[in-house]
Image (tube, rainbow over all chains, first blue to last red; front, side, top):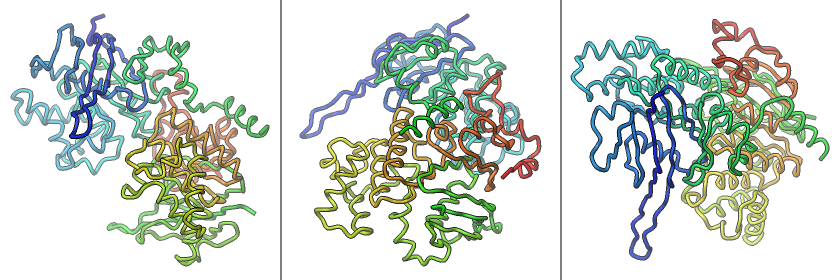
Length: 275
Length: 285
């Protein structure tokens, strides 16, 4: 198995400059996180808001540089602060954001949304762009009739499909999914998760799946990393982490997740009647 | 006598293409001290039906019902000024986005005290004392200092606690929580749900929990109403709903939970309804 993504001791600090009366401050958003992801696998990153998961996502997607640490993509060391970022590298890694309402330009037709990556990365003629966009629309469960529509004409689930389609236009090897289903309804969430699983099989994609929903993580992940205040407090295969959580925070997280099985409802009702 | 009784509620919106029916003949009842959960996906009319109870819908909405009573009073024939005396006092509501539902220009203390002044006519000192008491009740540390904080200085979970404090300020008989935890983390969600259930038991309130999260339903509700496209699909007590769901829609909803995934694929609503027409006939009451 080839390793698609490897991170060694990734650190990211944000410096806040001081003002006239206040001293500058440094926020340690990510404090030395290491992991590897193999081709075709899914790594899930779990944690509460402010724990650094999205900062990490931006580093992995080569949007922001890491303050320290090494990042390897397809075995090649990448440091965008040193100007390693090439177009070829950029097409290897793509991202899908959390909010499908905010991540699409309202004045751009869907066809142009999907064609834009092809315009930027190489000279693809207009009719071929159109063809490939049409094909991708069908892959993600939309139709050719959607090509000329604007984002506001779509539901949240459809928009998320469009965002996924856009990310896949350049055949990336790694897809970073930053809470891709947390804004969606349960039934739509199921459809999008199925779509992601199908696409992974078809294109042999590697996912870094960021989420705070443990039931989704249990369903989709091969490996799980739990982050807490910028540190990876737990890292292992899905079964290891779910069967035997080691860190206190992971245990709290499991205890806080609402359970929807009849046994726990019975237990709750019994507690309530006793009180 | 039921606390809230709604029969055959219809809400229609005036749109450029004619009337759009958001809620289509929903009937429900909430007893005293009962937690009713209304479950459904977005567009199922669950929020709109409760906004109709509160009288918070815009003028483009047309609300009709055979019966809509709260504590024996007819809500349909109330004038606006009479309704304002009930809403916020006897019926209170908590909204989905805690940060957006507080006014960013006023301190949280001012916003809580406003409720007390308007509905209870308390004096300045009494208001302040009661506000501190309320913030303590919802578990905010240093309540006296926090009164002079602005919403942007607090976290999402704390803002939701402030919203809850405002809602319970006048000891309402009915608390409507519209997706109170959707915007929050699981650990915070747990705290807020525990707080709501505790307050509900302590004050003996009726509570309506609007949500699309089956886990939240399982953790809080006594009875559940499942809504889809403005219609009621099923009504059952919480255990029956999870053990023996009768309507196909509920079955589909439960099967779509990643927790219950058996095979490689999650079943979706579409797997249960090959063509959309079946869904209308699938309702059981």
